[in-house]
Every structure is written in C-alpha cells, then in structure tokens.
Image 1 (spheres, rainbow over the protein chains, first blue to last red):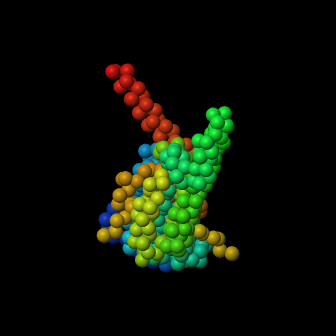
Image 2 (tube, rainbow over the protein chains, first blue to last red; image 1 turned 180 degrees about the vertical axis):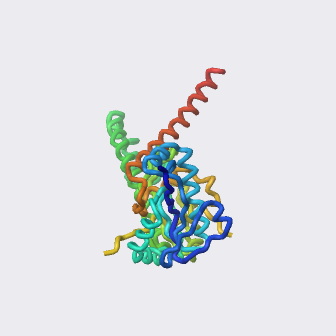
Image 3 (cartoon, rainbow over the protein chains, first blue to last red; image 1 turned 120 degrees about the horizontal axis):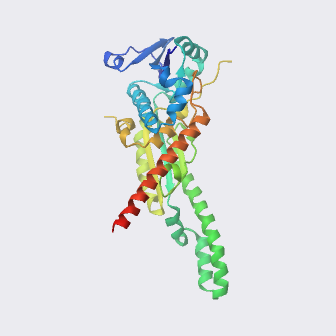
Length: 264
Length: 68
C-alpha cells in the first residue's frame, strides 16, 4: 500500500503560519520548538527510494523539480533566515522529521547564527586558454625570453627550442590561471564572512569552450553585497582582456555554508 | 526591489542549479536522500543530454551542407 512522504524544503528559525495561497500549493509549515519546517506531502509513487532514483535519470523531471525546490526556498528567503535542504530530502513521517529537528536543534541554532543577515554568492571563473597561450609572450617574461632566443637561433636549434616552448606555454598558462584565480579569490574573500570551494566542472558539463579555473561560494553580509558586485564588475574590466571570464550569481540560499553536527 | 537570482531562474542553467542544490551534501539526514552515487548518475545524464544536443547540431549543420 502507498503512503504519503514528507518532502522538506527548508527550516526557518521562527514559527511561521502559512497564508492561504501558499497552502494551496500544497506547502505546509510544521512547527517544532521555535523552528518552522516548510514541507510538502508527496506520493510514494514519485518519491519512494526506488521511484526517486528512477525519476532522477529523467532530466525533464529533474529540472522541473529542482526549479520548484529553489523557487519555494526563495519565497521564504526574502523575509526569513533559513537553512535550505538539499534537493530530494524525504522523511517517512512527521515523527521522524521531528526527531531530526530535536536531535540537531543546537547545531541548527548555530547555523542560523552563522548565515543570519548574509547571502550566498557564487563565483565561477573561466579561462580561454587558447587565447591566453596566443598572448603568452606579452604575459610571461620567460616565454618572451625564449621567443627571443628562438628568433636568434639557427633553424635546427630553433626547432628544438620551439618544442621546449610548447611545454613552457602549457606551464606558464597553468601558472597564470593560478595567479589570477588567486587574485580574484582574494578580492572576494576580503568582502566575505566565509568562503567555500566547489569542484571544478569539466567542459563536457559546462558545454563551454573555455576552461573553468575557479568555482567558489562566498557568504557575504547583506551590507557588503553591493561592494561584492561592484568588485566583480571591476575585475571583469581589469582582467577581461587577459582571457578571463567571471560569472557571479546570487543571492542563493546558503547551501554551501550549512554544516549540521549531531548532538554529543 | 530585490534582484533575486531565482526570479531570473529561467535564465539559470540546470547545471548551475544542480551545482548548488546537490554538490555540497548539505544535509544528508532524511529517511530518503540523494546519495553521491545518484549525483554521479545525474551528472552523467546531463553530460549525455549536452552531448546529444551537440550531436544534433552537428547533424543539422552536416545536413545543411549536403543540401547545398
């Protein structure tokens, strides 16, 4: 027999009564202690362990549900501090959800303090390595010196030096990516309360021609958000000509800055 | 007015969304959760989708050359 499951979007740190139009979307606010948990009742036919796994391989289902997950959290983010749940977190019963909230209440409180009054901003930096290596003589003194040597050499020696230069270009491009990546990171870090590095995504996933060299999240106090954005704009003008592309998105729910520890 | 990312979420790629809602393993606490293995599978699906879009485009451009 099928029974209903509880899909969790987020936790708010104050008891919230839901107004009717939200109710009509099937959302409910369950109040435990002083927390409200925003949930929706879902069917086993869609979200049981087995059915969820099957649905995850359906890109259309995934996309519409992920967008829904974020849209709901965003609604509450505008006027509340919240802890977002990962997409697809399901409880079998109200009791088991309540047990989680009670067991982890201290940790939840710490997390609310950590993210309160702040926003998560995501920064991705890409490098057009081809264009960068085409301009390597301007950007690297080592490459420029070797190029000079090649120009002054006999054809035979020049041939060998050119092979050497190919390796040098590869290394120098790596070095410049690290150098500028660090510069970007430092500029954003001083405006942030906390930072988090995420995995670099390969080209097959980004579908882009250029290479992702940085993927990070920054927790920024609300009063520093405009500085954060103008810094991005400034960096875009400053280093854009050196083949780096910067993308910032936000504010996101603070997915990257929640860490829940079990009560000892 | 808040220029919130989610209001513009139609412009946000599925990849960017997944990068936020899955990658961090924020709360692995529910009775049913998406595991690391599931996440790998999801990314594999996205990869396949992207490569099939690419293949379609290649086919399309290939065909247009033939038509000429």
